[in-house]
Image (tube, rainbow, N blue to C red):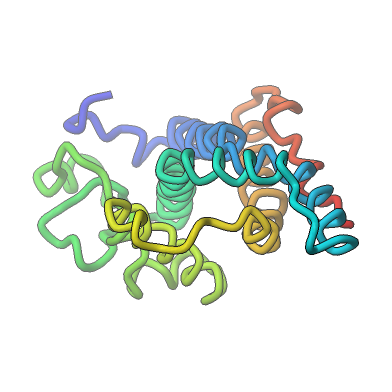
Length: 216
């Protein structure tokens, strides 16, 4: 859909379809994150480590190396997933998600074609979406903002990672404590709700993150 054609901003069915699609794409990106998919294996290795911390675990060593190698790609996927979800929240709350001359503040949806002249071809990036004026729209915790900001900062400084200590796979378990409720209670539910609004069957496989909830 062209930027000049903003009918979905004023048409409920099209708007609901876009929200469902944004949430769907967000979930697909989370499912593609390597370190998230390894969470059960990481929990198993942590149990072995707690039982025998001095033993060398070759499998854990190789897993840590692979997670570190995938770190940049994973961070990009996580940031993209949140960008899509935040755009869905903006649209749901009555705001546009395309960049405008007033980027520093959210712009309300106006009757067509009043927003047309202000719209750019690009949509908001994560840094704008994390700014205080946008963040208050999302109704998320400050700890969520800190986590996402840290991911963004690491992605932006990825060329400096070689000078940092090796990445610990066990830190993924701390990430899951933040991500699990966001994926399960916010994004998945909104995806299902908006699929229902447009009378489309949601994908059960797409919302299957049951492995995130298992704890050792």
